[in-house]
Length: 230
Image 1 (cartoon, rainbow, N blue to C red):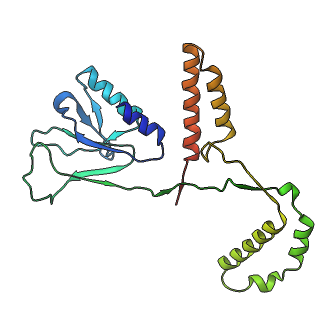
Image 2 (image 1 turned 180 degrees about the horizontal axis):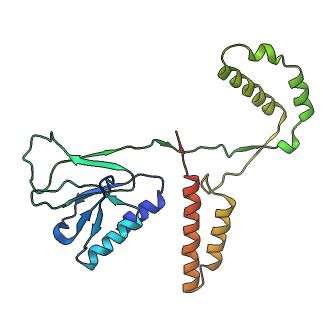
């Protein structure tokens, strides 16, 4: 469970599905509302099972399987941090069906994410740009003939291409050192890291502060997502 907690906390934008025979049987009851596919555990029989569900809640996972077996029990559980649908498979493989473990179909919608890649090698120095040259170049462009060919989208594309062309001609760039931090790292994250290092040698109060700071950094990561959805 510690591994699961680590994975969900370090990959907050990922979708997780945890499924298997947990064999809780009569040790827990499940309930849900008519319009809610999520099932909530109730009447938990023992402390170690309660601890298990505490960890599941910490990982932001919810149980979705409501297909009961021949004894009207839920042995096979399907947890996820996203909206999924679990139903009985009506056309399973040509193998004998275990009446205690129904074959299941899990439907999930995954959002394709692409890692945001930004060029950190150079940076435009806009404060040193030759804006007189840019203005003169803009004055010489016949915008009417340039932008009245094709559709509106094509005209917008041509306009930006010309602006970027002048930017590359008259705005100098400088090389940057490669950062050891992720792209989404902000100055706030750097401040947090600095504070963690400052208080790491303290006692329990220092450890509490460290946990708080790391939690705050996790919130920053969630807000930026660390990825761009396409």
